[in-house]
Length: 520
Image (tube, rainbow, N blue to C red):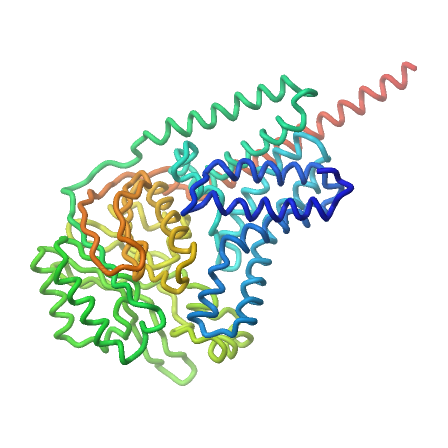
């Protein structure tokens, strides 16, 4: 792309970002980011200033997130009650915020390296990875659409148990850097291009070999499981008139379940725990006892304020019922503006009066909570999009044999969100070498094995019970032990080494030029 056509280059970056969405579920073009990032890196190669590289990265990010997370609009407008114009503005602002991270990667790349240099390409790959890591935790974090998720069915997935989703993404970005260099400088640097091709091939072959490594081992007897999908629309879920119907639906589905472990979705019962009739709890308990196991149920707990200066407290929770003693998990990582209100004095009025989101100001549970000991297994439970934070989930995995995610993706209607979320859950299973059981309200309810392979699922927007048998696993992967630290350290090392080598070569070149000038 000639540098003299800046508007055309910006449009190209925008389209490349939008095209990247097709690499994620449900489309699955896993190699596509290598091409789209190669295109972005080529544009950064021609960027004459850090400001220009920032603009190109921002355009790429706008394309990626506007196409990939536009389902936020559905939650705000269709179910959050926000007027269409405000919902569109809110979604656009959110996408613009997310686009700042690839923009930052472009700025760092152009600020530290020279145009049309191999150093710029290497730094671009590492800076992209660091920007994804930063996006995953800053201001609560939103790691959705990190390019490593697209590799769940590709050879690079073998690196996930070592460095999490960021490591396959880093190697994919390095592959993109090589592709860019190969296309733009093949004739001038044939030997360098071939050497880089060998390095990239080794990375991919090693990833393929690592897929076959078992980082965990079976423990105990396999457990039969029943994952319940109630398929209750978000528009009626919290309606008082539909409450008895909801209770009847779940009672019937539980009665039909044959698993030793029965899992119901997030907030399956649209009421507080102390509002549930004791006879209904006993009905659920009887079904669990009949199967010789336990039931895991999502609902809310309410704790009234203890004095005038406090607030009432609401906890998005999961509770066990059955043969084991009652255990409770309280959601720790809450969704900003959906479950918790950042800067409450500023945004509190807006959330309470413009959005129709029930229980938008919840209280987080502790960061670490013991796994549930139920049905012969130890469950690391997480609620809804908590499974998008692998670094946090890994802290609770070492003592668990199974991962359980309870979710309500009905907020996003018939959008890409549910498929993308299921893919994220598969990455968590692969990183921790633990099976993942997903019980969702409207889908996707699924059973995922310890290699991140989905073994069974219920059709989307149907009511039913997914039955299966799964074996718990024990053993600690490098990612469970170190989290994101290994990949972040590797990316920083690559940048530091590249910049050191570049400056050393520059000093040698200047020294040689000075000697030649002295001779003349």
